[in-house]
Image (cartoon, rainbow, N blue to C red; front, side):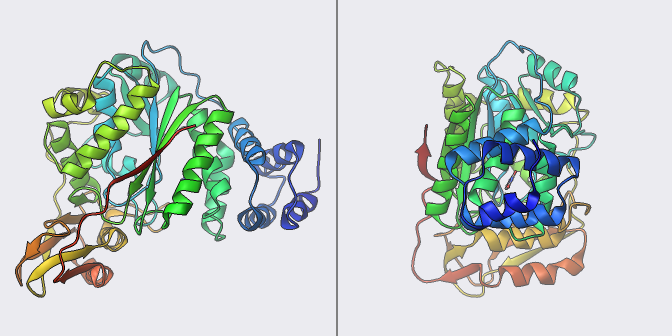
Length: 426
Ligand code: URA
C-alpha cells in the first residue's frame, strides 16, 4: 500500500493517530529512500510534539525491526539475556557485567554503539585495549556465546537500518528527546538482536538523557511495554546519574576500573550497580541458584573477561594507553566536596579527547578524568580533587571551564544520591 508522505505528516501534526499501514509504509519508504529526509524530519517533529499511543509505538518498533534482519542466533546452550543503558558519565557497567553474567551461567549478546557527545560508548572503551576488534560476523558471535558466554561487539549493518538513518536525522533536527522515538529506537535494536530477556538501566540526572525522574520513569515504562508487546521479557532499573559512576571517566581509564571490579575490588557504586543488573538479568534467564555478588567478589568473572577480550584479538594483559599530559584540579578552599556534577565531568572528559562531537571523529584512548574525592568527603585547600588526562594539553582550558560550576567545595556535608531509585516490571 502506498500513502502520501504529506498525509502521514499532517495526520500526526494535527494530533491524529497513525494507522498500522501508514507506519509500515513510512518506515519502509524512508529506509528505501522514497520518503525524503525533510519529510521524515517533519514527521519526527510532529511525533515529538504530539506523541504516539502504545499501539502506535509497538507498531513503529516492529516496522523498524522489519526494516532489516533479525540476528539469527542458533541455540548456544545457555539462556540469552542482555542489558542496555540509556547512557551516562563513567558508565562502564557493561564491561564487568557481561563477563559476570556469563560466569553465572547465562549468555550475553551485547551489540553496542560508539559514543556521541558527553557519554562514552562501550566500543570506544574496549578499543583502548591493544588488538581488540569490534566487528564480528553472526557466526563469530554465536561461536563466542557458546564457548565463553559473553560478546560485546559492534551492531551489524543489517540490524534495524531504519533506526540508523532516523537517529542520525533526529540528531540534527532537535527530535532526539521524544520518548516514543527513543523507546522504539532502543527496543527495535534489542529485539532484532534476538535476546531472550532484557534489563534496561534508565539513567536520571544531569549526566543522563532524562534530567527528571518523571521523564525517566515514562521512558522506562514505555520500553517495558514495548518489550511485553513483542514477547521480550524486559525489566528496567531507574538509576542515578547526577554524579559520575565510579572514579574513572574516559576510555582506557574505565577499562582499568572495570578490571579492578572484575578482580573483586573497585568502587562501591560500580559494584552495586553491576550486581543489581546481574541479579535482574539472571532472574530473567531463570538462573536463581547463583549469587552474582559472591561471584564478582571472588574474582571468578575475571577469567571470563580475559577470554572474551582475547577471542576478539585483544591482549588482556597488555598495558593500557597512558595520557602524555596529566594535571590536577585542586580545591580552592578547605571544606567538604558538595558538588561533583555528572554533566560537568562528562563534558570535561569529552573536551579532553575521550568523546567525539561528530560520528567521524576519532577518540583518544587515554583521555579522561580521574575522580580523587567523593561528594561529602572533607578536603583541604590545594588538595587535588580530580586529574585531567589528555594527549592534547591545549584542551585542558576547555575542560577546566566545563568543571567551573560542577565541582564545588562548601561547608555543609552532603549525602550521595541513592543509586538504585526504582525497578519497573511489566
Ligand atoms: N539511544 C538510542 O539507541 N536511540 C535513541 O533514540 C536514544 C538513545
